[in-house]
Length: 246
Image (tube, rainbow, N blue to C red):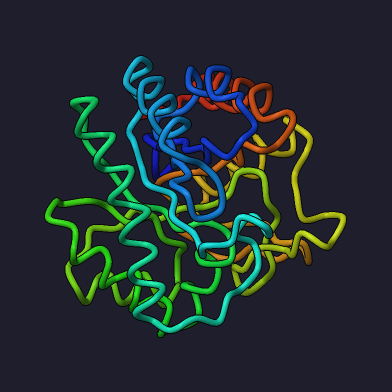
């Protein structure tokens, strides 16, 4: 096995209210900060839980689109997007500061995340937001993406991310949620999917191809109805195979 230490992250503060069930099984979390979900009350609640369970805290900014849960591309000027993302992250950072803890990372949400993988304009806007943060905050990025390249060029520390509960296409994009095989629901299938990436640094795609990939953190979506059970099984079985969750 090439990598024996990984991070498991989860998207939280999105209105499901299951954070207390998820925190025991993850090592980092991505807190919705008002773009697609979340407000000061939910952010503070999740920050407190993250502190309690010693989970690293990340901001989960989005296109400002609560109606579509941030999963639809918005065509907006770069300066408007910059302002929105900066405000979202700043709102969370203010609460984090009040709770005497630290922001560890930023992970864009939904359509913003996926567009930043291929769209230079959107990726550049996110990089500019990262540069405006006066802290050495990490950026969670997909492998072989535009935002990865720009982050490296701008000396933004990155963490490669893969998705534990999503299937991949041959070009390392995620299978669209419109397809029936987009989401991995079975805990055993999820375990094998993640362990294969850790062990081989390759992902098995829906065509059966084995495509090289890098991943240091694995995401399970918190709005999955079975997220807590899936996370519990994933963590315990990975640890049983000698993988340390940090």
